[in-house]
Amino acid sequence: MIFNYLPVFVQTTAGSFFNSKSRVMVFIDGSNFYHSLKLSFGSAKIDFPKFCQSICEDKNLIGVNYYTSPVNQLDQPVQYKAQQTFLESIRKLNKFNVFLGRLEKRPNGVVVEKGVDVKLAVDLLASAFRNDYDAAIIVSNDSDFVPAICEAQKLGKKVINISFPNTKSFHLNKVCDKTLVVSSNFPFKLGD
Image 1 (cartoon, rainbow, N blue to C red):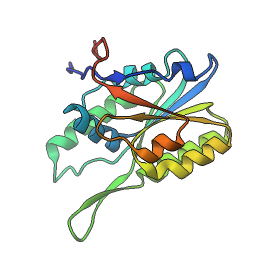
Image 2: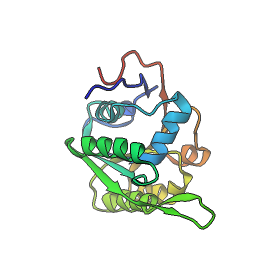
Image 3: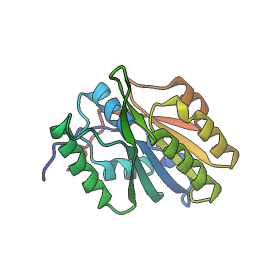
Image 4: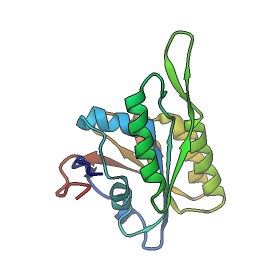
């Protein structure tokens, strides 16, 4: 399957922030990442392995955890099929893990994601407590992660936030050790 990927990249990598032996874990809030890409660049097509590897350059990438909820198959069959194809493709990648929450429809008709943010926060802290990583990269603009980030930092972990031009989070930027902004002008096209 051939995809035309967005030429998006991080303006400055986190590589200079880590030492050569740093163990890095990436935590991606999938729905937040998808919507941030759409709002900032008009599309969400991106080569995740290259994106994640580029963030930490040649440092020791321990793993990439991707958190999302499956869209409703009956309400959105085309989107469901595309999402399942995408999730299957990243499940096959080395060091990539997919964690699924669920979507709940409220009485007023609003659909909300459940179990995703808490799972990401628990994994961030549990992995810090087990000393699985030296630095965590959080790909999200959700300030609900601030308390978990602060606790990981108390355990001596560095936390970097990946931000997007049109969806920056003041609170995450203030708390994280470093914030990197995704740009659309990187000199190569992801997916080549």
